[in-house]
Structures are given as C-alpha cells and as structure tokens.
Image (tube, rainbow, N blue to C red; front, side):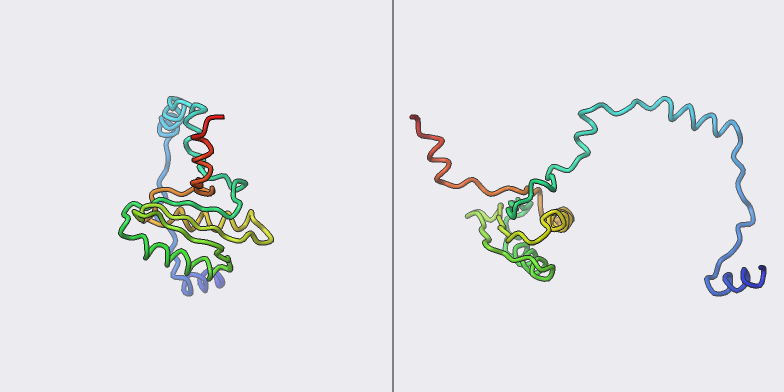
Amino acid sequence: MSKFKNMYKEFFGLKEQQNIPKISDEDVKNAEDFAAALEPLTETELEEAQLVNNLSDYNGHVIYQLRDPQEANPVAKEIQRWTTKKGFTIISHEKSKSGRTGYFYFRLGEDPGTESQKIQGYFAQLPELLKFAFKAPKSKESKKMKQRKF
C-alpha cells in the first residue's frame, strides 16, 4: 500500500499534514453557543434571497436596464453574439431612445425551462446590467387603452 501511496505523493505532489490541530471541548461548546444565539430568518428575509425572475415566467421576452446608457450598443452586440452561439433565435431587439433599457424577444425552443436557466444565468452575470426581467415591454396601445375611461 505504501508503494502506491508514495507514487501518488510523487505524481500529485501531496504532502501529509504533520501537525493536526486538536479541537478542545470548550471550542465546540463555544461554537454551539454561537449557533444557538443566531436568530432564525423570518419569512420576508427568506423571500429576499429568492430570484426575482421565476424560470416558469419565461416566454421569450427579456427586458433589461443598463447602469450606463452609453454601453447600450456594446452590450446588445455581446448579448446577440452569446445568444446566437448558444442556439437562440432573436425575433426582435429594441432599445429605448435614451439607451438605458433594452428588450430582446427570443423564439421559444423545445425546452423553455433550460433556455430560461441559460438566459437568466448569462444576464445575471453581466456587470453592465442593473436589472432584467422575463416580461415584454408595455406597448403604447395598452397605455392608451388604460387611459381611456369607458
């Protein structure tokens, strides 16, 4: 057995730990007391930790808001490059006049759940984005209809 052990040590550069620290009973008791003193999370605190965009909400629409409107074109090109690389088909892309918000509408594929996970993971890691959501922008027609009184 030691022959194989020595072979692994040489190949992987492993070293055995010489001084293993010992944990006293007092340290264990202090850790248990500390854990018992922590207050459990309330229901509202638990809700804050959840993602805003539920994967089941995805229907091809993604609206996003940028931190800096000057980055609108590079961010849009980066998103387009990534989505075509991953096999998504962009049906439409729009930007606001200020460039602060943008919107992508993707064609739904065979597995929307997997698509939503990929999109959420990618959009969440973009540092240029302030926030994003799986919803379509409000159209001008629907705003006019809401303003009318019947």
